[in-house]
Image 1 (spheres, rainbow, N blue to C red):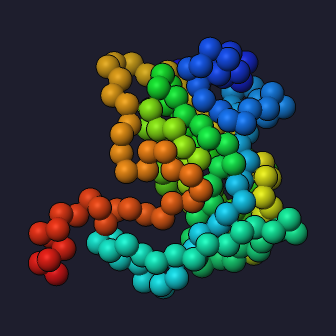
Image 2 (image 1 turned 45 degrees about the vertical axis):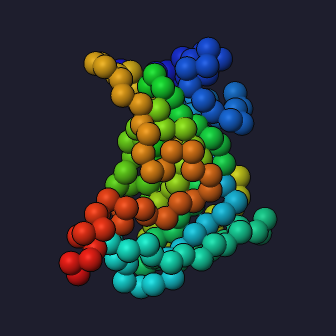
Length: 179
């Protein structure tokens, strides 16, 4: 079951949902709006290799905005630190953002229970679009779970700012050496 906006606020007040900083003005009927942080990362290589760390460059989004161009993936982050040890967060773009042709976190929208971070956002524009630091870019919903809870303790726990893929850590050294 999805929590209503007022229940998200109540559970946050009870310490069962973390949202820092929190603004009551960002509560919706069944979600909470989150903002885009001030840093964007892009991969510097055209071909990305899942068995290796891929180099990135970091860009600070100026107050005048940053134009994202189609044909590449941009890694942004939530301004807020969010998470819950009691509910599963699911994130997606605000419909206003989607109507600009900006895909936000389309393929990995489930955040593991127990993951507390500034969440990395995969941004993929359909056409050039200008984004701004602190803009409302997406929304998070919180879902009740059934069954025993195992809290997330993975490689992205505690992330601050955008974090590039760490999938290369999933390959054993032996697998990498066979290449």
